[in-house]
Amino acid sequence: MTLIDGKKLSNKIEDEISKEVESLKPKGIVPGLAVILVGDDPASHTYVSMKEKSCKKVGFYSIVHKMPDTITQDEIIETIEMMNNNPRIDGILVQLPLPKHIDTTKILEVIDPKKDVDGFHPYNMGRLVEGLDAFAPCTPLGVMEMFKEYKIDLEGKDICVVGASNIVGKPMAALLLNANATVTVTHIYTKDLSSHTKKADIVIVGVGVPSLIKEDMVKDEAIVIDIGINKLESGKLVGDADFETLSKKCSYITPVPGGVGPMTIAMLLKNTLKAAQRRVK
Ligand code: NAD
Image (tube, rainbow, N blue to C red):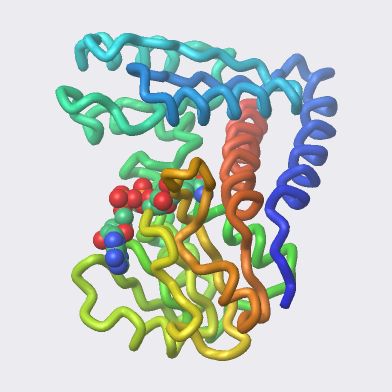
């Protein structure tokens, strides 16, 4: 079994990004990321501070715009429009989830697609599905980067994606289709989940249910990519796959933590760098 080490790979990517940042300096360009953080959700605050730290590490300019959860939708829109027009900002990210009184779709559609480094704007989603150059959402993009690093060929492979959200499962399926894999997307309404996972060469799970994928649900030598992040009552972080038993059966597996999580941040940096490089052109 080979452990897919997302921490190590993300460090390598961040080192490459730092070098690119250095090479942009003589052109007077410093990649800039703006994050909008609404409310006091502790997990959102943790994610944003991790993103801020990573920006600093690679030499990006970064700002975090914190807003109370009493903020109105129009005030958030105004802030995004200001960032759309700010030449120092290459990427804009709105940390989700937003409070219930805010229409998330409306907010995401206000972000300039050229600065949509999270890849959630329908313009980028549409281009992604068509196989055109686009900002792809960072988590599935990080998974694709893992396949590349570990030389896992996807062409013609049977891949089962478990979870079909707009930020994880759907863009994951689009990226895999673009890589010529045969993709099955499953979700909460899927009847007999294991009949799909058992047939797959690769199972990619992102649902938010601890240990949903068990050893008897995959075939021998399967590859399991675990996107889930769940905090147990004990405080322990686990994924959606039962790592203990699966790691004895799989050919490759990602751990949680230290798997897909760090790759998501590395891809956010990569997308922001890409936006800055477009500014040069
Ligand atoms: P979501 O709630 O928006 O979507 C969950 C999806 O899983 C839905 O499509 C739902 O139908 C499906 N699902 C739920 N229970 C299921 C079950 N029992 N069987 C089959 N399908 C089921 O969640 P999300 O935002 O897509 O996040 C999913 C998980 O991925 C969470 O654990 C989240 O923390 C994690 N996540 C991790 C990263 C990362 O960087 N590693 C990034 C984003 C999300």
